[in-house]
Image (cartoon, rainbow, N blue to C red; front, side, top):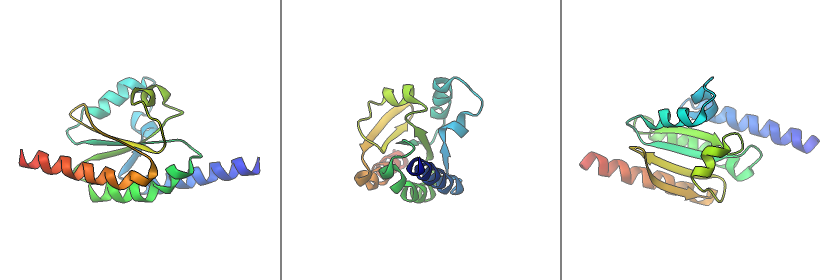
Length: 141
């Protein structure tokens, strides 16, 4: 039980780190009291900026290890993209849609289309590269 309490504490600390950046929003906060998570998800997609989603699970150590880097990425692209986190356990029906096979995973969506699916904590740097490439193409078009 002590180990479980430690995992929950670390999860809450990690989530507060992301929340403190104020540039990364957890999906649960995004949907508020809306019980229809699919409807809320599509509402999040309706913005003009690309949407970067970090899929995670509470207690996933690799997921936690990427929190600071994800918050930094959100600061780097703060006016160019929207960054959210989505708990794959709590929002399993949305996570299944993306056919995730490892955590953490990131999906970049723009204009309601999937630009990229990046799997695994070792590839988090690829998220920034793909997003930068997409944004540079968008500005030259």
